[in-house]
Image (cartoon, rainbow, N blue to C red):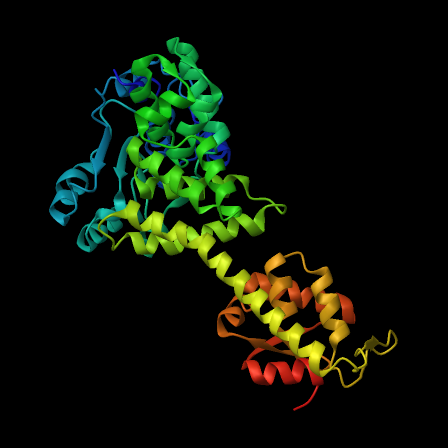
Length: 470
């Protein structure tokens, strides 16, 4: 027997997480014992997180003869009938294979009006209910509007948006959340101990990470790896063709340092191990999602944006690894190009300045703390520019502002900045870069400031930035 079937939950308390749903259902079952009844339920959420399991537990609980704090006892006659699949009053339907109106008429409408023969309640569990046709939904709707007191419908779906509003409005809705990595690891650890597997937490965490919130997938992966009786990081990585956390960390570090050589070496290693490119990129994004914090948000979001661009290109490229290597090799090249252009521009400005304007007075900018009005000399806000450069946390922004930016004007709400080169204009207009400088200007001038970047040619840039002339 597979681990998934062997360790499938049989009480509400066995379900990992989903605490809100479990609590409500247990209380409803206890109240129903005293005469109250609920007829229509709709469970929705991603795959493998417990929807069908809870539907089966609920079916047993509302028929149980000896409830245990809202849980089915799984020992009474009714519970045993259901567990052994001998209860004719519990009907499970896969909507994917029973989509038409004729199927609904045959399976439900024609039989539902008869009272239960063995149990207290007749229960219909319809999985992937969104697959039903419109005609089938309309047929189902009629009986769900005014169901007999002994009839209960439990619907489950992964795509709530495809279920008609006429159906959802007649059901109690329960949103099933993806299970956390911690919750999956704890369940996998329990199974390993029960089965006597040798394991390491790091190996279980890799399984939990690639399961993407689904317990069913996590147990399936564990079952696959457990044949070797050792669940560690190396075994899991090799058996499931996934990447260890160390490799992901090395890739992120090489990306942040723009070390294309190291990146290509790592990619070649993954290629030799047979790791799928798309799976690898998704694993990096999952790692980013779980490790993002205020300290690393800038670098990790930059990597996420890079992965999105590469991922879109890979879908139309015949050899993904070639394209990925080409993309990462361009990182250091682009960085060097920017640095070289910056040095050339600085040299040009330095030479021009030393020969033509050696006697000019340094321009100044003052901020009146009372009314925040700007008083400037002909040098046009050079002091503001220096303060922006000094306080910026980004080396690339410092470099671009120092060599390629000229403040043209400042009013009560807006600073107009002229930028040499369209490529650098695009970089400065990136939301995170623009917001950082706007916040700096707001702090310096003590009032809310918006930036407006404009492109300017080199000749005009040199004149305006050095002479303050138009």
